[in-house]
Amino acid sequence: MTGEELDRAIEFLLQGQANHQVRLDELTAQVAEIGRVVQLQAETQSEFIQIVTHTMTGLAEAQSRTEEQLNKLISVVGQHISGHP
Image 1: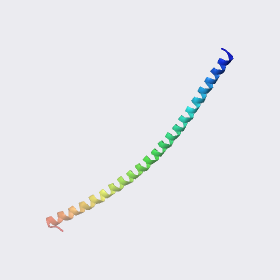
Image 2 (image 1 turned 180 degrees about the vertical axis):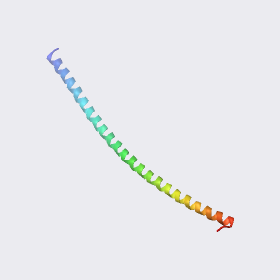
Image 3 (image 1 turned 45 degrees about the vertical axis):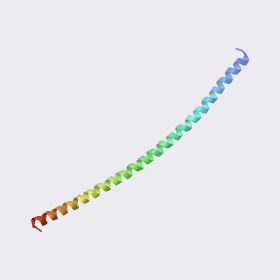
Image 4 (image 1 turned 180 degrees about the horizontal axis):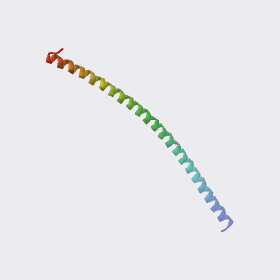
């Protein structure tokens, strides 16, 4: 191998290394962006779960109060129909 061929081979390897470094930098930036998006989605999901849990708890409490009031009404109507106050 001549000196010129060796220089071209070295230049080829250096250029390949530079290309790989550029691609690695691009991939690193993409991974960082994906990490940011995943974190944002996790936070959003957590907030959503809290809202749904709070809403379901409120609905369950309201249903319980409604059932209690309905049972009282059923009792009053039943007493009224049977003629017992």
